[in-house]
Structure formats: C-alpha cells, structure tokens
Image (cartoon, rainbow, N blue to C red; front, side):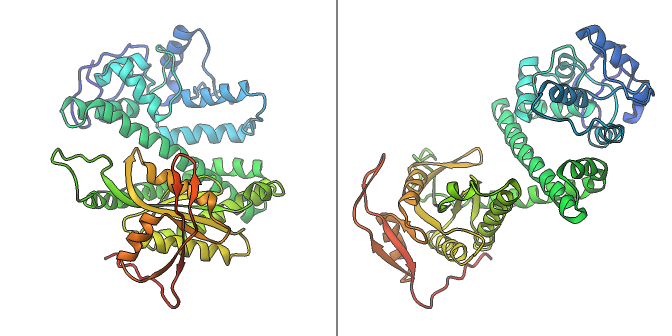
Length: 424
C-alpha cells in the first residue's frame, strides 16, 4: 500500500489494515457514510458499537463526537443541550468542517505511520490536550498523523530535540484551549444579547452558525501569532548587559513586573450573579489592556481580580502602574485598585515570568492602600536615575514574608507630567 504521508515528504511506507477506508490519490477519502470498515474495526477492537446518525443514513459519528457524548452522559451534573436532532446534525457538520473526513487511525497506527514510538506520540497528544485513547480504537485523522510526522521531522533532522518539540506542543495546546473557551463564551454572549436568547438557546444557535465564523477566526489566529512572534523575537535583543562569558547569567532578563489588584473583590462578587460577574471581570481586564498595551507593556496572566504585567524599561513600568491606578480609580464600574511594581531580574519560562522580583511585587501589592502604587527602594533609586518624573515617598520599613525587612516606596506623578512612550 502507498505511503500515506506524501504532502511534504515521505516519512515511511505505512501499511494500514485494510479494515479502514482506503486513501485515494490527491488526498480524497471515501464519504463517511460508507465508512463501515472503521466502525467494524472499533467494534472488533473494543467490543462496542459506534454511534450512528439518528436518521438511519448509516453514517458513523467521528471519535471526538462519540467521546464527547460519552463524557456528557457520564457526567450526571451536566445536561446535554445537544440532544435534539437539529443539534446532532450540527455536531456532525461541525466535525466535518473542523476535522475533515477520512479514515480514523488507532494510536498505534498513527504513531507507526509518523515514525514515532507510541510513548512519544502519546506524550505529544497529551500536550495537545487529547485524553488517553485506547491503543486499538480508531481516533485520529490523516491530518493528525501528518502533524505528528511534521513534529517528528523536526527532531529527526536535528533541528529541535523532541523534549523541546513537546514543550512547543504544550504551549500551543494550553493557549488554544483557553482561546477557544474564551471565543465560544464571547460568541454565545453576543447571541444572547443581540437576539435575546437564553444561554442554552444561544449555544444551540452557535452550533449552527459557527461555520460562518471559522474562516475569519482562523485568519485572526494566524495574524495574531505572526505579529506576536515578530514582537517576541525582537524582544530577544533586550538582554542583561552583564551576561557571563558562558552566555548565561543567574537570571538573564531585567524587566519591570507589576500587579494590579481590585480592592474588596471577594465581598463584591458575593452580590453578583454570573452575568454581572462576567461583565465586571471583562471590563477590568479590558481596562488594564487599554493602559498596558498602548505603552508597550504585556499582560502575562490574569487571575480574576488581579492582572500581572511586564515591561521592558523601568520608566514604562512606573507609568503603566500609575495610569492603571488612575484609570481604575476614576471608573465608577470598578472598585479601587492596589498596584505594585519592581524593576529587577526575572526568568522567562514557558510563557510565564518567575523570580524574586515577581514574588516581591506580589507581596507589595497586598501592602498597598487602595488607590496607591508601591515599589521597593532599589526600584525607586533606578527611577531617580531615569529622570525627575515621579515623587517617591518612603513608607517606612516593613517586614515582608520571605524577604525580611523591606522599604516600600509610594510612587506618585509629579505635577503636569505625563510620559510619552516612543515605540518606533
């Protein structure tokens, strides 16, 4: 039988059991309504029958749909809102548009065809976010196998070691999981507001409407990825000056890290329903982004009532912190905020930022009074060196957990001064 992976290169000649649907030239596969071989293979291997379409067409549901249905049925706390015939048809259409059609490879077959040990392939699938699939249950499409082969080639060609390939996959899996959840909720809420539908009805309608949005959302994902990758590579040039001769320092980056925290958030949310809480969080995060991004900062993570942000220069971290305090303090829809920041050494790892500077900023934000901005004495000295822009007032020595005695410094803006950031 012909090798199945010929789009970019031939990975290996892979013989797939004839029970599965044959692959035609140019990548065309048989119609799923005729995929009796895959269904028979699943029944033979795992002793259970595949799910069939309710209209008696003989078409088998894909494995993702079957697994979703099993999970929903097993979770008695959830109500499957897709039980009606129109929703089931929408699920099948969605599976076709997102995953395509064609044979389903078992994990053993997919790993073999991609030229990877099964254990390595399973690690990659787990990093993407797949659950553990029984070794002899048809699950993967040819696209899945090709992606696995692409990743295998990075390691085989000596470009990227497999442990780092797995890390790249985990980054994509975790970020896209959050992106998808975020976008679905935004689309559902839009339908609820614009069409005055209940949450359940809006989710059913999205199931039908989603194919219309798919192309632009995919373009958006690629556009954002390219822009962020370009900016990220440029940031590689902003390294610490005192790097050792080995090319490594204890913590290779010096950055500004800050936290903004809403005051009395816990007591506030007790009186809010789900819709109001969602609106509050979205408004808070958007308000922070409206300050941080224009000044060249980045949001590292959000934690409901708290946003962790980072900048490349000490004056920028101070300015962002002050503007966040001012903007949130003037917003009647938000409670007051505490803000704290540190300029110091950090370690960037897997999209997050670590180090004692981060920990100290987190400790200081809990010491700040509502509507105030704090930093430490070392950062205050750095700010004095970059210009006479801020009023820096010592708050007296405080004992800070894990840091001992620390001298917090309150930061305020000098009269008639507003910073302008040159991003050219």
